[in-house]
Amino acid sequence: MALVKTSTAGKTNEGRAVLDWHKSARYNVRIPVSMPGLGRGEAMIHNLSPRGCAIESMSSHLQHEDVILRFVPPGGEEVNILAQVRWASWPFVGVEFCPGQEEAQRRMAMYLERLPRCQLLDGAMY
Image 1 (cartoon, helix red, strand yellow):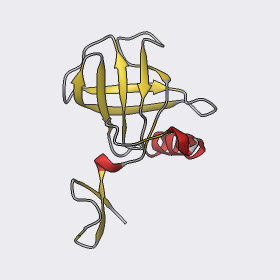
Image 2 (image 1 turned 60 degrees about the vertical axis):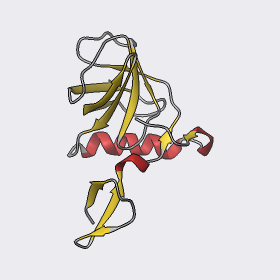
Image 3 (image 1 turned 90 degrees about the vertical axis):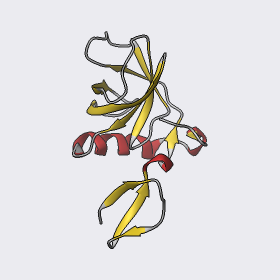
Image 4 (image 1 turned 180 degrees about the vertical axis):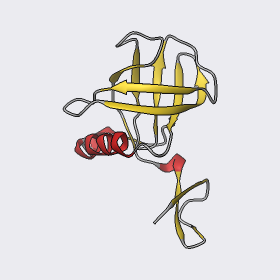
C-alpha cells in the first residue's frame, strides 16, 4: 500500500492509504550527529520520528538544503541518511528524510520501536 504525503490525514487517494507527514510519532532523544562540514558531536538530534527530526547545530542551514546525516542511535546500528531542510531557526533546523532509503529507515524504525512511550512528544515539530 503506497503512502502519499498530504496534510489531510486518514482520507484515501485513488485507493492508497494517506498519511499526514506532520503527524508521525516523535520521540524525545539526544543523539550526536555528524553532517558534512561539521565535526562529530557538533550537532545533536532532538525529536526523532520515522520521517525526520530536529537538529541543534551551531552551523546555519538553508531551507531546501540537502544534508547527509550520520549517527548511531544508542544500542542501534549506524544510520547514514539523506535529508532535506524544511525549516531553520538558528540554532535548530528541521529535516525531512528523503524517500528511497529503506536500509537507513529500517535501522531507525528498529531503534524507535525500542523506545519507551514516555519519550513520545506531543505536538512537536521536526
